[in-house]
Each structure stands twice: as C-alpha cells, then as structure tokens.
Image: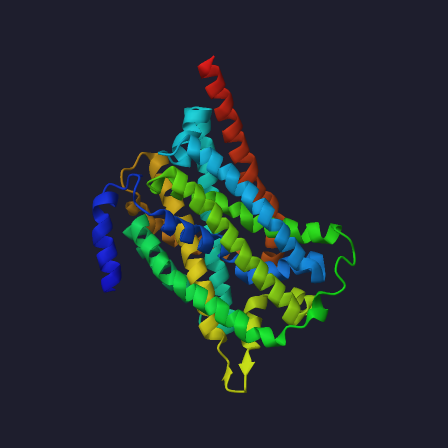
Length: 382
C-alpha cells in the first residue's frame, strides 16, 4: 500500500485534470504494458483455440503470428506517429470531421468496453471453475472490478509503475512453469508436421490473430510516452516479446498434453501447471501459477477500462474521467454477466465471432484513418 500511495502522489500533478499529456510513462513501462496486454487472456485460450483447427501444428500458427503482429504494430505506430500528441479520439475528428470522427470514437469506445467486460467474465469463470468452485461469480467480479477502478482512478503513471513491478514476477513464474514441465515434453506429440497441409494452420492462425488485433487499444497509451520514437520501438519490442511467450506456451501445451487433449481443455496452460511433479514433492503449485494470469488480465482490463473512461470523457467534453469510473465499473459487471450465459455460448462467440468483430477495429478502421489522413494532407500540400 505504501508503494501504491507514493505512486499516486507522484502522479497527481500530471493527472489532476484528467487531460492527456506527454511524459506520464517511460518507454520501458510502455513496452511492459504492451507485452502484458498482448499476453492478457490469450495465455489461457490460445493453445486450445489454435489447436482446434491446426492440431499438432498449432505452434506453426503461432509462429506465423509473429509476422502479423509486427505488421499490425507497424500500422498502429504509423497512425500514432502522425498525431503523436493526440489520442485516437481526437485525431479521428481531425481526419474524418467532427461528427463522423465522433461516430468512429464511439465505436472504438464500445469495443474497448466490451473487451474489458468479456475479460472480467473470463477471470470470474476461471476462478469459480478452477479454484473457488463454491464462491458466487458475482463476488469475484465485484472484487476484481474494485481493483480495476482503483488502478484507473490512480492514473496511467500509477498502474504503469505497478505493471513494471509485477513484470519480474510474471517472468519468474512463467519460466518456472516451462522449466518444471519440460521433463514431460514428448516430441512425438508434434508429429507428423504439416500432415494436412497449410489450410488448418491458417485456420488456427486466424483465431490467434484475433488476440493480436486487440493491441489496437494500446494506441490510447501512445501519447503518454514522452518521445514518440521510443514509444514506437517499445510498441514493436512489446509485440515481439508477447508473441514469444504465446508461441512458447502453445508449443509446450502441444508437446506435453498432445493436440487432442489440448483441444478439449478450457484452460490448457492451467492444466500444464497441474501436471508439474518433481520427485513427488514439488507439485500442486497450479494456484501459484495462476498468479501469471491474474497479472496479465489485470493489466489488460485496466488499460481497456482506462481507454473507455478517457474516450467517454473526451466525447462528452468532461475534464476529469475519474467521475465515470464507478458507474462504468457497475455497468461492466452487468455486461460481463450478460455476455457469457454459459460456457458453450462463450466458446462459440470467441471462436467464430470475436475475430471478425476485432478485424473491424484492429485493421479496417485504422487503415481507413491512415488512408483518409494521408489524402487530406496531400490535398493540403497541393
């Protein structure tokens, strides 16, 4: 608590009026935010989703995602570098005009908020099905929402510093998981390679890409980094690091569990932690491993909720976004419960609907803004 209070005190001057100013976070902090955000809930679902289509070649689907992640990051950087001191809500109006720009801004806000609500429900489902089965899911949602609201109200500098402090623990726990499960790796589980050609691999990659498209939300954080060039480099490095971790967890899941079992599991990475057993002494550490997912989900939901609050405040002309956090938090709990009435419904939504939905905001709208902005600049020069 002392560390949190010190961080809050140091950020009050920069965040008092709720305005977007440069210099709030360092490039290093931004890189960590990008890494943890991109990993987010993907570390829970990516192995199963990619293996559903690609089977034992799921690791190849993840490898292809490295190139796609770089291209998407380059797109977001190109857009952000054109307007380094403005948020996406501001330069949408500069590019498309006041009314059309506000429409696009509202569309982005809804995407950010729905993403936050979905992930809140994911963590509620995870805790109540894997760890605390007798606890009502509403209690978990309320408790986690309180933490998210505290982080957002404290400001970007505070939750960036908290993420920076949590990052070493994430690295330690992740590599503990990989090292202690490695004796159970069986190379035969990835054979035969390319047994059904490239079509299933691209099918698995299509689902993998759905998580990469969500990194468009990090555009909101870009103006908070003091030097745009360093922010761009941090964006790229964070994207590469996150793809490394996701590729590794996908590969290990296939190598240890096999493709058929990985497809059937809701949380393959959690099952990996359950299988750790060293000398019948070092075992049953899956709850400790769950800290990995609490860290990444905390960062991702906080950024989504922060972006939503900022966007609504700007659209309504409010000077302080903090007054929106409590009502938005309550609405987020209700939306979270409504978005996932049961597990089969959620699985169908994630595997069939989320990717096309994210494609609109992660690719089409950024390309539209970049293209129209370039055309307007050409006309101005002429």
